[in-house]
Image (cartoon, rainbow, N blue to C red; front, top):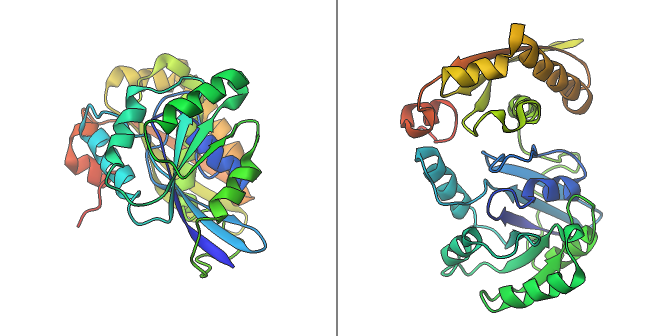
Length: 295
């Protein structure tokens, strides 16, 4: 029996959440085309006959422009310290960017082994793949380089076999039936946020968050209330839509997935859109919304 903790880091929108969902074979992290979709630390748990791997999917690391960005960067980098292995995920189709160099610079004094995961290989030629491998090898002493496509499930099994070489614990941290440490309450709010990003596409800036304010499970139904927090009234109007049509669509999509994928029973879902101006820069709200521990 082998087990261990593996941190997944990288700049925003390189496919970290898609990769972890593919590895776990369940949705543990929401995905969208919007950069920086992952806002919280997500744990996905992989189990097979002789291994348990606890993956920690972190927010994309980038140069912060507000208090929230600084908090997320700090959390993501902190989770590279007390783990057995780091997966540094790169969008190989985009090549090496300033964001990649910023992260690698932050890892310089870290003695945790780092595997370079070249993701999205389905979007490039073999020639470009080998060129990118050579470029990265000159930048950082990676212990392994593994090309993958999380979206196409290409070479993911090989990645898992490589990870196993760096696990040393012999303790099972979670029961076999667990695939995430996230609560259903948290997952419900994340599903709402995912559907919101999908429905609005590029119409809203990435200044929204969702929090489940009520979660009550009964024998035949689960009652859920989720607040959608925005920082401007015009964004609130966009989310609600004409006569509430867009918010209704988000609610229908979210309720359907929560019923089928999360709770396995009928769901009554209420959504409320609230404006809190500049919430990303105010510590009071970052604490209330769960981004900062109130210690």
